Length: 376
Ligand SMILES: *[C@@H]1O[C@H](CO)[C@@H](O)[C@H](O)[C@H]1NC(C)=O
Ligand SMILES: *[C@@H]1O[C@H](CO)[C@@H](O)[C@H](O)[C@H]1NC(C)=O
Ligand SMILES: *[C@@H]1O[C@H](CO)[C@@H](O)[C@H](O)[C@H]1NC(C)=O
Ligand SMILES: *[C@@H]1O[C@H](CO)[C@@H](O)[C@H](O)[C@H]1NC(C)=O
Ligand SMILES: *[C@@H]1O[C@H](CO)[C@@H](O)[C@H](O)[C@H]1NC(C)=O
Ligand SMILES: *[C@@H]1O[C@H](CO)[C@@H](O)[C@H](O)[C@H]1NC(C)=O
Ligand SMILES: *[C@@H]1O[C@H](CO)[C@@H](O)[C@H](O)[C@H]1NC(C)=O
Image (cartoon, rainbow, N blue to C red):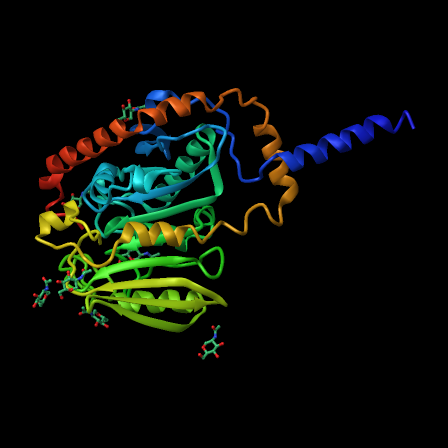
């Protein structure tokens, strides 16, 4: 009996640690974050494939390193930087950004992989950047590994489609949301490949019929893109979608939704009549402002966050339980000494901080309007 005791104790300890440990938590859980970084957007740089790559991280006002948060990556159009997407969508505002970590990566030279032209970063490099960026986030913040998502506009929408099509990097993401996507490579004579890690890949997409940059009906010139119906058909086949439903709102927006491989609403599309190359919002956005566009009946922020809320990276941590437990046990090591104190203090000043973020983003947005004029 005494000889068995250590084994019994070890077994109990193992079971206890397995029960206590949350498989979805990452090494950044319990790690101190400067209070100056909370509720703000901060620039971070890492080295990836030999390049200095940068991205903006917005931690929510109530950030607490003992709680794991969903992560949403937002990809800008071209040429651009992450701050353009943040200012255009206002995703960092508390009403959208609460309880989530928003990250706005910067493309090298302002353009994401997949666009034609010799100035574009090779796809492998931008995909590697995604892996390195996610590892950085996991190691430095408390991330819910099951809740990582990507949204983006134009060239950024085209790039997140490449991520969704990549069996390795795509595996990190639970769902995708492109707007006005420049799906170069996926036109009828394009040669882009698509091998998603699972079926179906949850996607909600938006596109305006008056988009003169990335036409709803496709273009065959220097930036060849498919017609949106052709691109949708590709995913309908890959995602094994059937039973499309169609609903029109106020004669200006048609919502299509499919049941894919038995999962209702896993693939959705909003076709917005009269909308240009802009972010769809019921309130004026910068991209609407510069193109003379109007607010629409579609509020992409709300629809995207509601859609993301339905999905998790199901395939992780289910079959490979032992491996996940080992990783989590290591991360449980640093004792989480931080209490609710600092977070509470930050929340107390929340109102005025929110105001500063808003004013800051508006003035920044006005300053970059000119820079956005020719984006794709
Ligand atoms: C990477 O770029 C950032 C911002 O442009 C800069 O602050 C940082 O020093 C650079 N890092 C290296 C290693 O060059
Ligand atoms: C890129 O292409 C342009 C035009 O085709 C050419 O003039 C330029 O030299 C190329 N740049 C590089 C770095 O290859
Ligand atoms: C795909 O087409 C592009 C341009 O049309 C070309 O640069 C690229 O090498 C092609 N890739 C493959 C794998 O054939
Ligand atoms: C582009 O070319 C393809 C293949 O030739 C054709 O099916 C498509 O209709 C063309 N699209 C446009 C917008 O002209
Ligand atoms: C598709 O619709 C048909 C007819 O409305 C229905 O019988 C069928 O169960 C639906 N299939 C799925 C997968 O929802
Ligand atoms: C969209 O384009 C059509 C055709 O060019 C035009 O008649 C219509 O006024 C445009 N709609 C908006 C909202 O700009
Ligand atoms: C519905 O469309 C009409 C014009 O067609 C517009 O005046 C009204 O504001 C729209 N409603 C909403 C909720 O956008």
